[in-house]
Length: 352
Image (tube, rainbow, N blue to C red; front, side, top):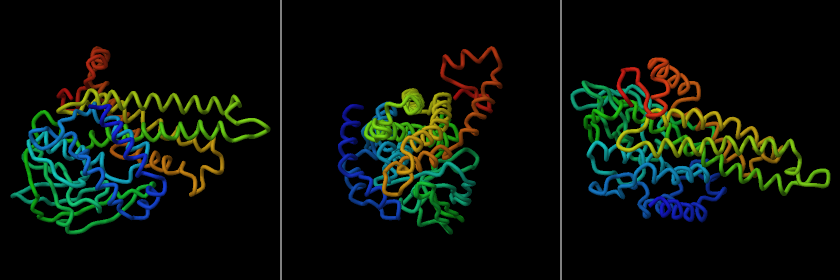
């Protein structure tokens, strides 16, 4: 199934997700034709169980798709739609047609069947009809909130020009509200967002590595290609190492995640990807020189996303701290078993 997914998406993106299309979306133009093509292909429902109208794909099947979203700088919420519909399916709810997003941060509370609070940093919030969030209550509740039901909204964008909006709700009636299953942690959307961004960063780095190698072999200085100079070769080797590490981290995180998300692999993947994003962007711009900073060159379409995505759904410092605290909490005796099992003790002491 994965080979079919990857080849189909790559053909689609190669035809429709051009640098010009990405630049146009950055000015606020919703790429309706591209979303229609994605929706027709059914990829937004890929992670939904077949019984609920989806393709029943597992996360291991979808890692390549999310990486390609990063490689082509897809200006659409396909990764967010995948995660939102997956969580609806985990909670036994039918998938939602059309684009979806989710709020991993905020202060939403559910009381008497109504939601109040703030949903912060919602990816593509202004472009979707509804968003998934976890609301606090007697038990954590999965809620589906209509964007139009917000009492106030603040429109923001990240460094790449992608929408990251804030919505305030005051006694809003959710489209649905169901208890979160006991085996699903309350920070599932933060964890899921980190997993998505780790794969998108890996894909963006793959695209930048290819672009950098091509440029180094084409750009001639002092009578020969700059790629023949040892200093440039060393920099490209560093970029290659971090790209490979981020790809393997993302693959492990997706492969180990099923009905619940694997906390240790996801944490490690986001730490690895966030570190690689900064180093990779620096190397790519260093090799390209001044031309890489021009608006006309496509390099910034990747690097601006790397600078944005590395901080979304937990920074390098945040996830490193979570990893360190969990390992220290387990003690020296649990260190190696935790690594072998791919599990960490959560702050509450439950396995995750």
